[in-house]
Picture 1: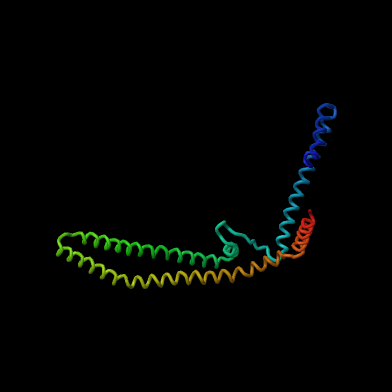
Picture 2: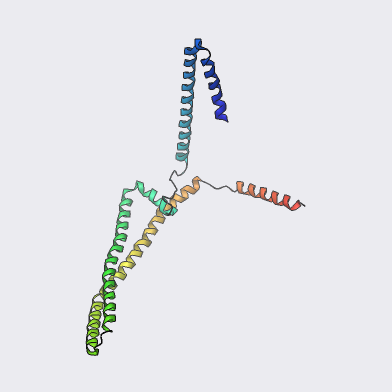
Length: 221
């Protein structure tokens, strides 16, 4: 409504120009000046608003952006990701951590595939050997399979020990990485809290309003 009221005088001014050709040039110049003034005023108002927002952010105890970077990311990771944007050394550490953790998945998958395929083979071979009709041949083949299987599992015993150590180190890296991130972000969330203090007055006032409604409802018949 305010916008329509503001535009109305220009509409009537335009009709006046249309039916008063003798004053067209002068009136058009006046309108141009008026519109230029309007545009400049709006532009200045937006600039002032933008500066107020920027100054307000800079004048707080922390202008650090507290936010989540994605829907699946929790706020601690969001704060930490913003924090390291200004720290090249921490970005390098993050790359190292990310690479070693991802490589762990790749390395263990390769070994798991080899071991898994071998186990599947022995299961299939034993199943087929048991269907051999000639008992002597069956016994011989089953013995060959079991010997091969035992020899293989002796070989991979050391692999299993190393895999367990790799898994332990994976979680050790994860734990110490979290310790480091918490240490770096605790101060930032505290700055954020100090910059956005929570007062009890508004809540207490709201409770009083609630109680007032409750009392009114109790008296209704």
